[in-house]
Length: 358
Image (cartoon, rainbow, N blue to C red):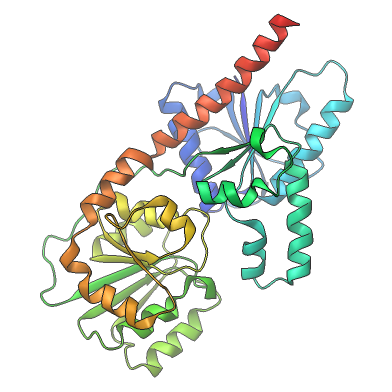
């Protein structure tokens, strides 16, 4: 079985991290790394893969690589893979291959949150969904995502499957000495309006014991710095910037907080759970799919008083162990890779069975 992953670049972004997790854990499960190849479009060297990586252009051809399973992530790779599928159908005596995509977000919602015109966002989303309807399998992260796409994908009952994201966290690092009478909060995310970092700043204004560490950069950073100054909390808010080793900084946090308006499936929440952090997060469908109220603290992200109360009371609940058990049972890298490997094998086994019966 030869597997190809098509991704936009090798940048350290969520979808690329997910692909790296799949690849590394497939190798642990016994897949020969010589039978896995990564195809990407844009120059960048943020992430090193343990398999061959090949830079391609949109009109490159993969027909000579003898691939059994093609697996794409994000819009441009999906378009490329659709083009490959169409071309392959026109070529006589080409071996049967299978085409899979993983959707990392609710496409229309994501386009709108990025500031795009709603009509243009709708048109692009519809075209994208029509294109991937030609694939053999479409993977989403949760029941709510499956419900969202059920009416948007042709023949969705046969094509849509759920495989949750997973992360491999090798070790947990904890502070040996906690600051007395201090609450250390942390977030790790892109600093855009959708993440509602401003709501956290407003919520800690009256909590003098709260120190807030923000890992990440983005278009809202300067606005957030100015807001912290306006609120008089600039000495308690620490803008750490982008960190390639963000996980190393999680040891600072007593509470991990993420108040997003929308998510696909948050890798940072998985990471926080893996490190046994008490989590406060927005009460949105993707987060409700991931955890229960016995594992994290859900809040209305736009209710400042509710968020403030959650921060004040979070240390009493000590939910980190419960979140960790959810991670161990559902969101490890090996759990995710096992499900993808089963999917790949199932597709190939069905093909072999059909050939025998024909």
